[in-house]
Length: 112
Length: 112
Image 1: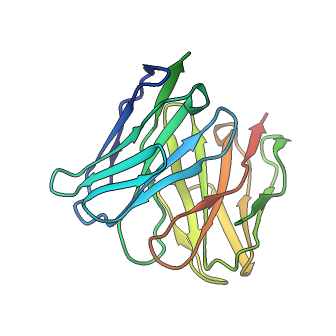
Image 2: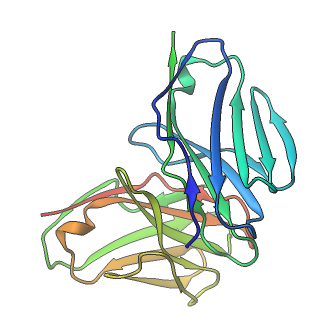
């Protein structure tokens, strides 16, 4: 059984600071890694995808992947109150159309 | 923009009823997925399909069936609804392979 672990939070970060969200996964064969943002009552919205070791930056967001440690992280720079949401880490085992395995999410609160 | 639509945002049904949840995507994606999301349990994969008339069981297929007669449409069927199927149901679609999945707005189903 594939597992994806996240700290449920809440993680409270002051406005303007860096928010750091972490995720570990159990399946060493995982190939694709995603971060989704989900506002209360809404569906998940893709923030970042990452497929190879290292960092990937997109605006205020940076995804980091370390396959040897089976670890994925998401950094949010200059955090804004609108970043307050639940962040879901998702992992795909690779190949074919297998569905994603999701973590339970980290609830992030940005304090004004 | 990818658009995934679901037939209802809110649905209330009685125990034992047959329930159909419809999902339509307009991006000609091969892959389609059905998840349910519950507090404390996160998102869990029910069924997925990688082609018309093809289906694969996910992690929690019991009590559900699916139908994919056309590429753009993927239906989730609850043959005899039970109270433990009260949940948020999310449909997603993606291109071939372990690629980004795009979610519909979700259907909140209540079974009384």
